[in-house]
Image (tube, each protein chain N blue to C red):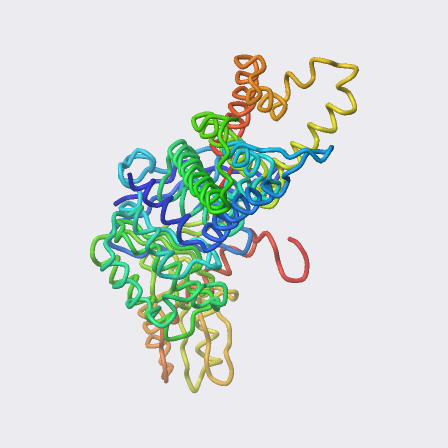
Length: 240
Length: 305
């Protein structure tokens, strides 16, 4: 319990946590509003996008939220390594397993809280604009997609920061991975048709699209687990 | 609480930083940890705390630190004056650590006052001077009132008043039956602060004994005798102790090493030579330290050894 309180106080006592969280919420709300601007299709016919689809797009198709969510994920270890406070943490809590999983828990908790606030903010904006079209994604579908997406970015950034012990690399890492994956698929996808099936972001998208759900979710989970295992082992074995 | 460090060993590539180091740190006294730059003091402290991985084991009252249910009550460590987030206020930093040590808000305020941090408690430490950083680090270490204080160069950057305060505080802390293990380059301070010293060079143990025993071993300990007939007396003393043992100190003195004042006084009396002064001169901790570590120093001014 002390470790959870410690982590909570660590996170909330840094202004960056609040600023980053605020901008995630603000950017999702802004992107939801931008979605309402697209009122016609390419042929000029009016289109009606459902409320949940607008919110989903505002979260998942939002590059600003992508970077900021990664930033929230990278903070747990990033600040600790950057300013040497990891030595204070590991002296107070010498069992590193507990430190790793409590930080992971707190990172996911913060990411989820920020996502809840973002969805509520986007919903409020859309309701105020009178854009409340039904249909599209269900609310439950929206909730799990947003949760999985935010967790993916937070976990990747969290693990990349532990692995590299470099805060900026932890933030930019998930973005670079996503770009690298797109480039690999674009260059080699024609030659190796199976490539998108084994990469994390493509699998995540396939999962969201409901294509081969079990396989896609399994591949995504394997990647997440792989990063977590590497991060955990390195935290345990390396000097602080 | 007794700390027992056994066979601590750490290498960085082909460089041996800590070489099979074993020693004990006992409660009720201040133990100084001395060694030249690069001798492995900080690495040893990190190994003791389990922050660095290497061979060997450190037991805290017979148990490794992770096996104690509540580490902040066992040891409070201060390893660097810059270990804080630059935009987390000093109070928030201590409140965060208070969670680890199950420490009340009242105790946090108490420590802030004790360390003279009241005026900067709400400020971000990014603008702190080295001395302020040291105070915040010390506040972190003592916050949970641990059984052991482990401090790496805590006096660096402190003003003379703060150093004086630190000395008194650490002696008081130890006098309560707790264990204080402190490294420092300020040997004159260590001389008045420490009861016991652990001395290392190139990662190896050179001494683990009381400060008085350590100083006693120095060849700088000697007896000074002054006399209006110093040449006559020096001749008698050389005949007794050998020519190398006696050194003339103009205008009317001579120093003799490895002897007692009683012995020298007796010789002077038998020789019928009047004496103006007969004094035992004790080496300082600094002299003893320099003598002992001369050959073991990793980085020497004027080129590597």
